[in-house]
Amino acid sequence: MDIRENLLKIKSALPDGVQLIAVSKFHPAETVKEAYDAGQRVFGESRVQELTAKQPVLPGDVEWHFIGTLQTNKVRHIAPFVAMIQSVDSLKLMREIDFQAGKCGRTIRTLIEVHIAGEDSKHGFSTGECRSLFAEDVLRQFAHTQVCGLMGMATFTDDTEQVRREFGALRTLFEEIRCMPAVDRSVFRELSMGMSDDYPAAISKGSTMVRIGTGIFGARQYF
Ligand SMILES: *Cc1c(COP(=O)(O)O)cnc(C)c1O
Image (cartoon, rainbow, N blue to C red; front, side, top):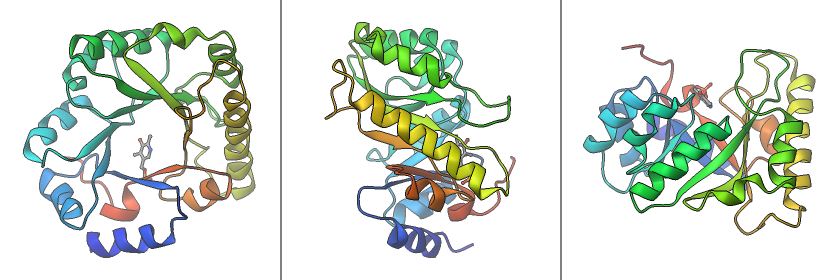
């Protein structure tokens, strides 16, 4: 697997304004360093223990994004350094992120995870719940977080029409929220959707952040 080559190929195909999150979960720090040496600075991880092990051994200018299911009792381990938590799937979690960010004297950027897939197994707020969070300005109470947009995962399927439909629905919700009076559009502007297998569809539907693991690093090593 030539990580540098994969990175260059993917990056050169991304339109302006679409950021690449290199998803390094299940890959050892040395592998992450290879991508770093090829110029990548933004990485996504989905497990707290793995992230806290890698963070100290990689250069300090890496921007870490947390993208997996996050238990409230583990937020404190990543709050001192995490740049963005993309997987906020409950108010309880948001409250804890805000509390821990405050304790560290930081502001943590977040995305609200929305459940757009047909299948039940994925986390996140429903479209309706997400809409009310913003319509009722529920998130204003959190002073140490900056809600920068939405994140979603499409159904894992070969049916590209379904995937496009799901991404399209998230885009529509995103635009709707951006137009709400309480929402600051200069902050709320990220739409994180698209993984190795479906990122072209996500980009065609307006993604601003693609989260790509396998396409860069190859198959995950379950160590
Ligand atoms: C693992 C993961 C990815 C990357 O998946 P690939 O198919 O390897 O690109 C993206 N987003 C989330 C939330 C993930 O958990």
